[in-house]
Length: 379
Image 1 (cartoon, rainbow, N blue to C red):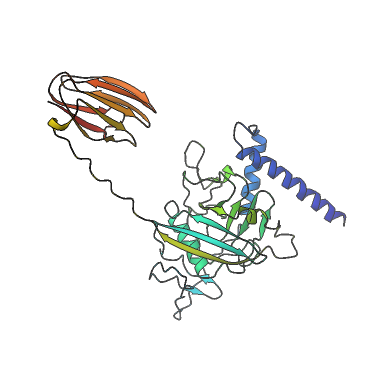
Image 2: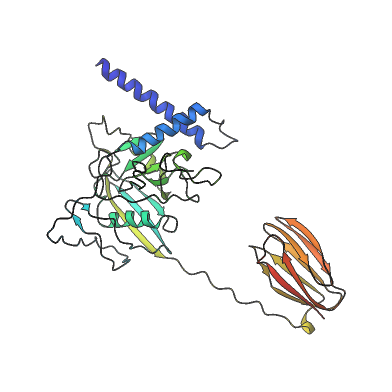
């Protein structure tokens, strides 16, 4: 009994240290004191241990038997995506290789988790930044791989990990694939959905089926530093963020805490995951701005600098006419050339005007963005 009390005490102290350390990592300069080096090291080590606690979590691929193995037919869904054939696998739910690419990165995907104990939550997936990872998750979900699996490792207030049919943290689909870390997708908010793995081994990633959902920001798990530099994932903890919770975060926060090494009962059960695919409507192509003739143009005209483009690219005015550049975004320098020139810089917003007192054709260019050029015709 004494050993049990000691173990419980150690766990409590461990959770407190993790929560304090990770909260310090994820806070903003205005609200949270900067973490001490010692606290940061503990936070990184403990968070890494939580999602990589299973060095054997991702098994080696199951050998394909010499006799022909039947091709598995994915569970049909309301929205068909592709005629691609799923990976050949051996029963139960062990696959010989990752699935072929079945998703369209230009479409949007959501996954709705229905929990056995009631409640559901939905995650938005990131097919553009992590196409292989999203394709893997979508295939496994549609194939029913995650049905009746549990959140086997849940550290209250920090993260919830699932995706292992064994419920121990040592299960996987039979194959492994590499990381797809992106500086655009980070563990910077509660509800970030990311891949659990056992680190980079032999130069290759160890992602499989296990994933986790953050309950706080955990930047130490990002594949890039704050300044955008890529980490060396062979020695640092790197995890692919492939989605985020967009509804039902209260259900996620309510997932029962569980330590797979000591819990006598299974974790909260995922009843099923429903994938919804939506075709993204193409962005309408803007119609070209008609070029006015000299006789129909007033003596003043305006050009807008926005999204790194001059609109319109050609302006026509009469002698004595004034052109005004409106800087609506970014840092730009407008420069005129030929017989009349000017040079003025504006940041973020502002305007600059120039009156043309002689006929001719003049160029205007942004000194910071060479692709931004245009013409003023004066007659």
